Image 1: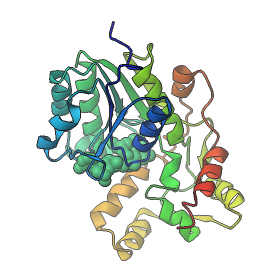
Image 2: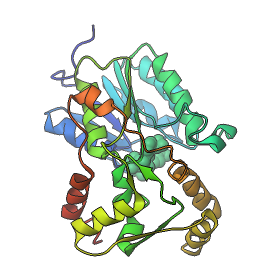
Image 3: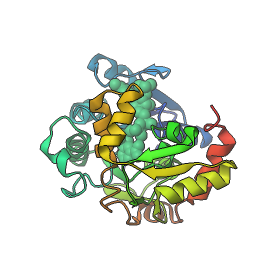
Length: 291
Ligand SMILES: NC(=O)c1ccc[n+]([C@@H]2O[C@H](COP(=O)([O-])OP(=O)(O)OC[C@H]3O[C@@H](n4cnc5c(N)ncnc54)[C@H](OP(=O)(O)O)[C@@H]3O)[C@@H](O)[C@H]2O)c1
C-alpha cells in the first residue's frame, strides 16, 4: 500500500500542463491544496519529450505523474522507466479511444510514426511498470471546438469538415481532468482503464446549433469531402501532411465509430458526464470564440 498522495507535500508532476487536459488537471490539483509541478516546453518547469536531458529535473522529488503523451514518437516507455528509477509511485496516462480497435483508425495501424502505436506502447509500458497506474481513453474532446484545432472553424462561423452526418460523444476536458485527479489522489483506481465519453452523440450540425444557441450568433456546419478539406487547409497555410493527418483523425466520425457512450466517467466519479451545453456555456464565458 503506497502512502496517499494527498498531504505528502511532494509535488504532482503534470505533463502537457498548458494543454486542454493538463491545464485543468493542474488547476484541480491546486484547488485541492496539492503542490503541482507544471511541465511542458513553455511551462514553468521546462520539459521537452524530444530532449531526454529535461526529464530528470522535472521527475526529481515527485511521487505521482499525469502523462500527456507525445504522439509522433513512442517515448512513453523510456519516460516510464525514468519515473520508476526516480521512485514515483503512481502514474495516470492519457491515451485515446479506439487505440486497440483496428477498425477505428485502420490506416494508423500501418504506420509507426502515429499516435495509435504511441498510445499502445505507452499503455503497455504503464501496465508493466510496477507503479500504481490508471489509463484514460477519451474520445473527441469538446474543447477541440474551442481551444483546439476546430476553434478557428467555430470562430469563423463556418465549420467545413469531412465528417458527413457522423456524430461523436464529445467528452468535456473538465471530466477527463476530474477522472485524472481522482486517480492521482484517491485509492481505488489502480489497474483501471477508463473509456471516457460524454453522455450523448451529437453530429456536427447539432454541435453548430448548440454553439449558435449559446453564442447568440450563427455557426454553420457544411460537410465537405476530404479533398476539399485538405485543399482549403493548405490554402490557409497548413502543410498537406498536417491537413491529411487531421482529416484522418476525424475519419472515425463519418464512419460512425464515435457514437457510443462509454461508462468511464460514471465508473470513476459516480456521476454523469457534463452536458455539451455546459461546455458551450463555459467556452462562451471564457471568451475563447471572440478572440
Ligand atoms: N484532442 C482530442 O480530442 C484527443 C482525444 C483523445 C486523445 N487525445 C490525446 O491527448 C494528447 C494531447 O493532445 P491534444 O491535442 O489534446 O493536445 P493538448 O494536451 O491540448 O496540448 C498538447 C500539450 O503537450 C505539450 N507538448 C507539445 N509538444 C511537446 C513536447 N515536444 N514536449 C513536451 N510537451 C509538449 C504542449 O505544451 P507546450 O507547447 O508548452 O510544450 C501542450 O501542453 C495526445 O496524446 C492525443 O493523442 C486527444
